[in-house]
Length: 87
View 1 (spheres, rainbow, N blue to C red):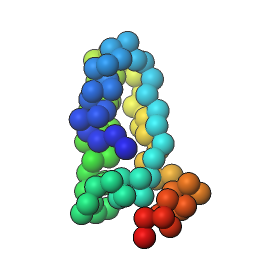
View 2 (view 1 turned 60 degrees about the horizontal axis):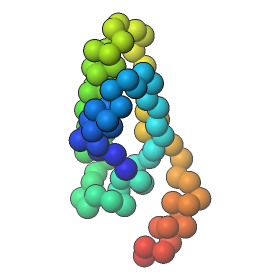
View 3 (view 1 turned 90 degrees about the vertical axis):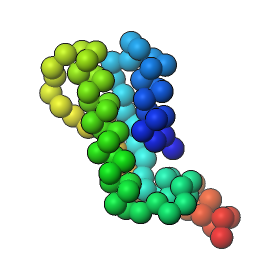
View 4 (view 1 turned 180 degrees about the vertical axis):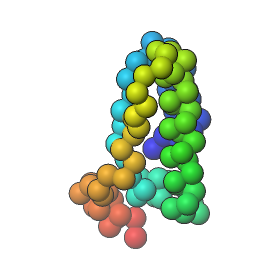
């Protein structure tokens, strides 16, 4: 999963990027970062979206604000299977 520095690196890597969409869920991050809470996850969402929107504003000028991320997707079958193997 990408965190704030990862999204920043992605935007730098693709300076002509005009659209960024992604889908994830808490479970994806929870399995990779020890001590992660819902509150920390929600704050990370706010920070990432603010940074992405500011970068896109710099690149394309004013446009309707929209959230590029779908942060609360349902847990996938693959995630359920992996959780079973991690116990």
